[in-house]
Length: 122
Image (cartoon, rainbow, N blue to C red; front, side, top):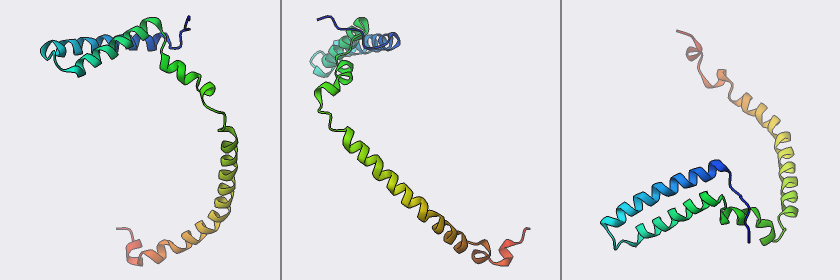
């Protein structure tokens, strides 16, 4: 099996940098507390990130890119129906909103809300 590169050069450099940073941090903590297993796991994950950066291949990215092969293609039909329902709702809202806006503007007329004394400028 010869995996192709699926991450960019910048992404690989970031993975290498973060991997070495976490590896140095976890080994320093592991030297002080050798019985703490969490630092060992962080060191292993940091090593994995370093390897992903060097090879420019991430298995999780490959799995995400090929998700259509693993998942059934049932999402296309409901998505189209959902878009149609949203359009119908938006048409209904736009038709009713102009009447509602006129009513709101009539109800919140400044002359009805404030007294004439409030309307005077000082």
